[in-house]
Image (tube, rainbow, N blue to C red; front, side):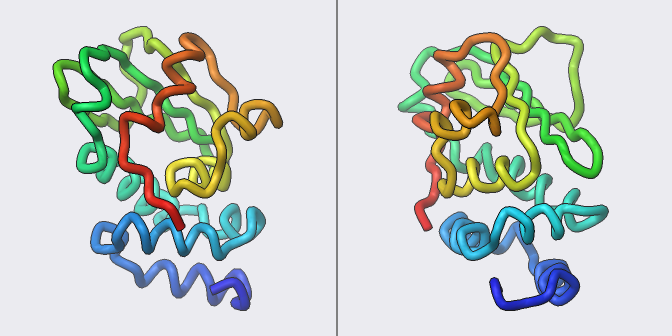
Length: 157
């Protein structure tokens, strides 16, 4: 996909059913695109579909055995065309995801741009490196944020 113009790339990705794309295939797609290309496709309805599919899949990729007795609300703020907020609640071995900001105070908040979010959730970005390079901002419980990847099956591209 890396050889396409941004219009062709957006057109090609807009035809994908993201809910049917395996996590490994999604990771390969993200790995094959530059930061500029990732940012270019994250607009309008396509951005909504991609974010929705990623957050829907979080429930399926949750590892209750790894989370143990963790109870936490994690707020994700993805910046780009607009700021999108999702919240992941982990409690009693379950993971639920909601779109939008609740009135509950999160244990940790992660803030990053579109491309960095896609790299992180697809296993193509190292959260520690992203934090050190200020591409990922963390408010609240940094220890929880640092361990989040253990609680989910993150694909490897």
